[in-house]
Image 1 (cartoon, rainbow, N blue to C red):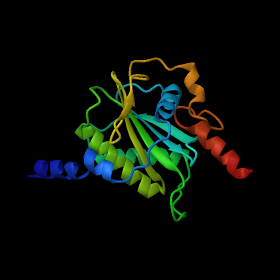
Image 2 (image 1 turned 120 degrees about the vertical axis):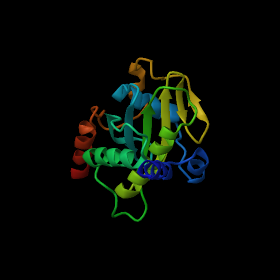
Image 3 (image 1 turned 180 degrees about the horizontal axis):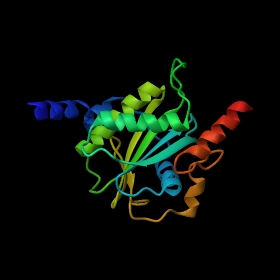
Length: 197
């Protein structure tokens, strides 16, 4: 009984592609540049998530990468991981009436570009983490051997992919005050410096 209940709860914490598309997720103006920039900064390998916060001009404010630890695809676990990393790299915007910054998630995984239940759990987790941190929920992007794919939009490309080496040219693809470290510490320092001005 408890196993069936756990499974039902996990399914409830998952978004289908149609639900995601109907949620009004803002489109990225330059998805290839965002993907290339995050790939260059974090060099993700399979089972690595990269959460990034973009300002209204799609400039990188902060980012963090981390390995998936949960054995099961559970949106609640993913939400908690995303929220913990967001709290480390960027202050919340809960006092604002409407969000001004957008969080996007790049997830590097095995398999092809087709939607999986794991993707659905990450989508649920991203949406919930954004609500709890006062951010606008942005794109969910998968990175596989075949390339990258913005799920729910049908936009994608062959490079970068989970096997490609980061290109030095990609460093200019996602402008920010300072390129963040893998944990996002550099981005947080840049954010505090700009806030102190």
